[in-house]
Image (cartoon, rainbow, N blue to C red; front, side):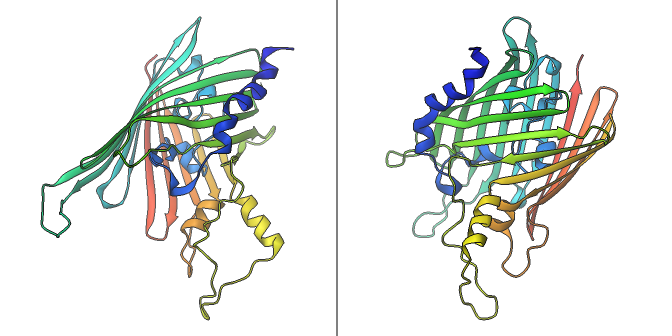
Length: 341
């Protein structure tokens, strides 16, 4: 039997203990590792894609997509959040013919400056809060249709006097039988803390299993993408957030079918990419889980929807995305990619 056919089984056996003890939601530290790392990913609704086209901006979220076409490409990403916080990300690719392709990246989350107070409300010294992530990603083709990849991450968090350092890995594999179809499986954020925030707190990682596939239609310049997220846990609902009648205040009872459908669709993220030319594309995405978690009880608005566009001019590529999280909290993502070759 070829080794490529045994890879899914080997990965499952090795990582089974992590699958059984995984957590989701706000129960983990280092949640910034779940943030989208590029406008293209954000515009298509999630934080993971399976599109094998040499886009270096997909490397951190899916290392099995790393290939020789990313050689000497430089990518710069920036996202502005509310309250003057920001998220910046840079990556650079290099190919070594005999050992595979590598992408190095650095991520910085700036939460801004805070005024410090003691337990009595008296002012103390101001402080800053930030997260750093340093990553080395590797990928290569096993044969004509299978590729594998891995990320090695070093994480550092600093919140006033609370500091933590950790290390994590991602393991991924992709199946690319032809240029129009690709699918990927990833085990993300398998990690351990080297230094906890305090003696009484044991840091945990936002471990996740994701499966995605994308398909470009044969006679239409359109590609659709489907992401299955949090496969390690079936129920992603928040027990504390019950559906209530806005007029009577009574809790609404769900039917078994509605309850099953709600839990199922929280795992599914869909996205589309319209490409009228090789130098321009328009993107859209829908994240049902995000919409259910962040919508207002009285008005959902555009929560869960995202949009974006990308265009190329010579060796420069520009990408933009707009993602609606809440009625008062939408994010703008910017990217510049340069092909130094």
